[in-house]
Image (tube, rainbow, N blue to C red; front, side):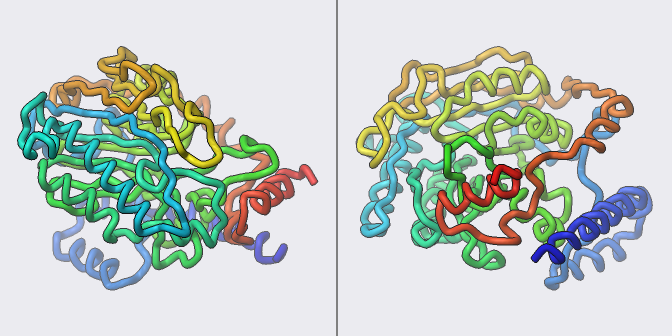
Length: 405
């Protein structure tokens, strides 16, 4: 095992060198004939690993976008309860939770079923944002239990939400535990964005888990950092911090809390709307600071008071200012009025923002030497060595890798 682990350093060096070579050749690739580019795309589509293309990051204030369908959009953040699915009664409780989530989506669109499904109140919402686990809830499940409640993507559970997106011609962003066929037995902490056509627009893995926050235990949902080398080999470096470039703006979504440098990287990659979705902790303060520091719109969406969630007090992770929509100056445009189920909605002039946005400036020549030489205590790829079955086993893995035992 130790021999295998030591080889990963060289493996990652090769990946980084490949990315650097891709960046150096980016101008040549951009100027290549269309036929050659189509041939390269066909090779990737045929099942081969993607080439090590350069990371799509802003260059002198310019970044990649898709054309906008309208000049301004309505953004709504839904603050909902955490209501855990029962593993032994999965079908019934999953159906219950999906019905509750879709009801909240209908309410956010002013089109309650009780009103005949017509919009009788408020404006159409173009983007609805939900927290990290609005459907499945959260419990300290074992890996076996997590695999029973995790979603397939696509799958019947996501289809229910996607049909609401299609009905309203909007985007809906939410978090979930997900399964991927290329990652057997892994359960991925995933952010999902479905679009107005009823399709999955973007699947964004959680970048990393916070370490040392849960006492003797640690989370067992797989993140990018847990399997970094294999992830990069499969999807490329650009996918480690994905941006959904949609016709309502560039959207990044993350359930990583307390990670300002990660949020800055999303902004530098062109995120215009950033959705922070940590269940079990308020996101308002982080959203305000992130918007101001990175000059981007930020939605900080959290959970409400959650009665009847086994093992947790009703107020766990809820605060009165827990859900906000913030503009690039750090000004709160909308916030929930209390800690109950609620929504915060705001108008975002996305076209004007795109025209007038000034990217944050960072003196990279000054800071890069520090970042390049810094060595974290906890190295990546922990879940490539061993996939922990429980929170306790994951905690032991964390402490061992951090040299604490």
